[in-house]
Image (cartoon, rainbow, N blue to C red):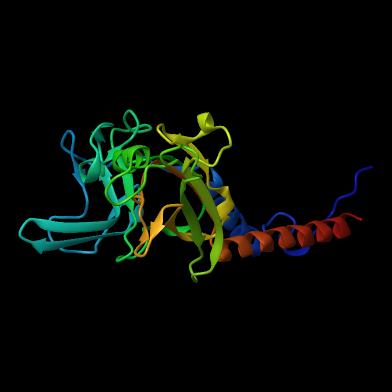
Length: 286
């Protein structure tokens, strides 16, 4: 014989309010975790073989791509003289122009995916290049290569910087770029360093200057990242800092959104509420 169970108020049939609210939070959490976002700069328009470095007027507005902000400062000194720092973007394919004429070119054939790619330049007189997200994220990866200016400078030297490896090829030279993540409160979350050139090998045949798009793992930056700052270091320094041109080309910045703390807390509440509801149901059925 089956036993009929009567539950006052129909509690078993109705959903507790905490389950309804928690389910909405769970939907938010899981939807934000579905897949990663990729900034490939494909939403930026440029004329063929051109670039944008923030000009032509003096400003510090920066620019955005894929909903992510890239810091930039541009200064017009007048008389045809100007300077920029931070981030620019370009579609120039040129691996032969040395000096400042090659600062807007990636030292690789084309961009990683789209025809447009980003450029970062660090100047000791300006803020470090900064990437700012609209919310908290977990960076996953980015593709990097040298600019033509930096690569040819390291391979041949210039009036301002040395040829990597020196005359003998034995000098242990190197150039790195470091990505450091920061929380919304400004606390460092982690950092990742990538060698754009490395001449420290005992076998000189292993020395290299990066000349192709290379995927770099950014998971070391952790989660809950609001901004990323770029920094450079080199074996070739002088009284004014780094002598090596401090540039890097980047593409396919990949990251995943991180749920806001309130959503995560609501999800934890959902688990607790579900556990309590299950205990009550078992008690009624007993």
